[in-house]
Length: 101
Image 1 (tube, rainbow, N blue to C red):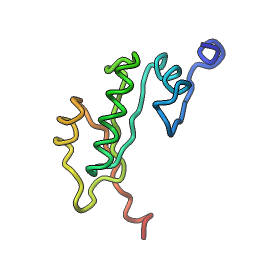
Image 2: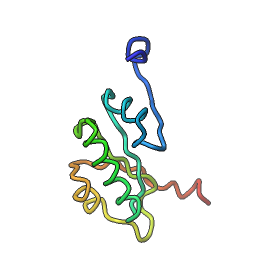
Image 3: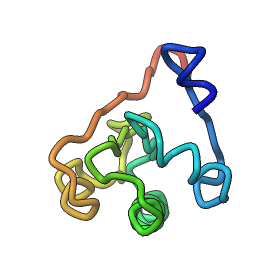
């Protein structure tokens, strides 16, 4: 609440969204970006994180899923990820092949 009072926008980066501090912050945010890769392990982790956030009061409508480095061989399709996470939209950031070479 202190950040909302003094700052028009805040960005919270957490590697552990299940921690009590992170959940407290995520519960009062307008938008939660859940960033993931399109592989099976990342999808499993994302599913657990979404369920955990929902169980602790984070509004599902505030959670937006972002897929990083897409267009790689062997990744899951966007439709599979959307269905598994029960989201209508998946934001996609493709791999920048020029930077990786």
